[in-house]
Length: 609
Ligand SMILES: [Zn+2]
Image 1 (tube, rainbow, N blue to C red):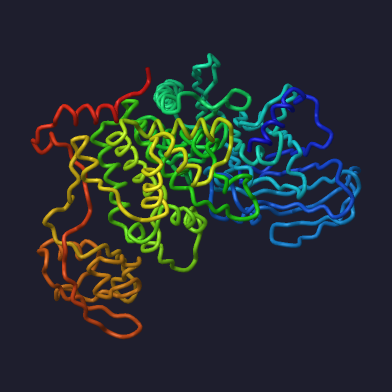
Image 2: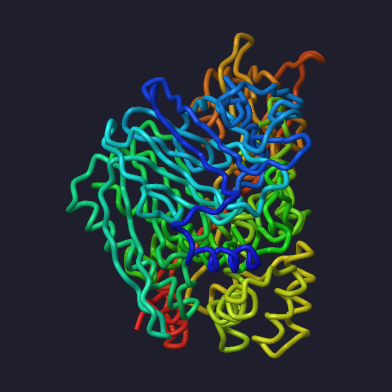
């Protein structure tokens, strides 16, 4: 976004005088109780010829397609004197106006009843707007500024929370389409906690937590202080905060039990929608999303893969780099909470074990690379499928797969080079983030080569663990920190995961069985109706589990089941559950060496000076 933001800086000076070709959106809420907004889009200086406008099919921070066009209706076009213009729907979400004058006004109704960072949620308490889900845009006008006027604020007691630039007249400004679409806007009665962070160059930036929740100001202040600690740990990783446009970064936060919920990163803000009844009492579990999304303000918003730049709003944006953009962010999101002293390291060991299980125990990680798993995001990231997919066998999350890769690289840099992953992230920031020079995977390899001064190590790491699917030696790496990787269910018999639910026919296997597990090997699969296991009728999941629980590794158990090819019998040979856990030397009464203790402390302790 580098070029576009230079334009933003230049226009900032003139932000209060409206640009000639600015697109002006007026947003009103006469029917918020039924989740509707009325939107009017005024386009001046429309060039001669057919004007094409549309709704988006993708959204920054999302990698799959979303049909946002389904939620707009009553679409009408007018000229400057309110004379109706002929508007033709040429695709589900694309409209054309062939005959028009200098100005075109398009009005439509927007429906939104899904409170998260991807869609739109409107009721009398709030309007939470993800811009691509809410606003039409015109072809060929990407570089034009946009301005927003939000009506009915007093009627509902709403404040405007957004990274759009406010001006004295009560409107909100975006320098161009990319910035506008990246600027989620929440209209709500909010409570705010603000703090400042000083960069090494002496410049101070303002950060804000604005929360719409059932909490009092004291709770918001206390929670804000926790978030503040995390932002300081994030600064310590990179050495400085990014220079936020207009000097502010805002956590746009909405908490309510019926929310859909998610976190979405943006350049100068994040939309975090959470599903607990309130913040109070849930602080620790809410922090993870804050830590993750804030880390994104460097990693993906500015250290940005070329594949996502500029963002295309008409189709999914495929990227081979999500193992870094999401995976490394996932790793740091959890780590920074521990470094900030807001989570016990024992909890962190469970998180780390989750990462290791992804890389060592999923069928997809055994056959596909982190780069390839990143590309599958166009189907996996909130992508909706009506039919069954084989995702359980062919996909493993680039969040945890990438997180496990980050864990291995961090431990290897510490062990082999007396460096840390922080050094790598800081080098990436200086080479690609700060100058806003989008990267490719070879660029990342070059930065690793230069940080380690060892191009052979970098080439080897990328070829084996990024383009390939070889595995790092996690047992040896964790041992450096006095941690033991071991089977979590050692000695317990296991048949493999089988998800069962009652159907008219009987107890049905509902999800794919997993490659390599005993039930898969024996031929059981989704849709099969389980009749008996080891001679006993099983009525539910619990009954099934208790049959297995009484068995030993190596036991052969007969399953009878039916499907459209008839009745069958399969013999399942039980194995040991392969799931890993990570425990400390201390917990098994093993002596921790001073070197191990120092290694662990250096890794997990605060970096804030
Ligand atoms: Zn993320």
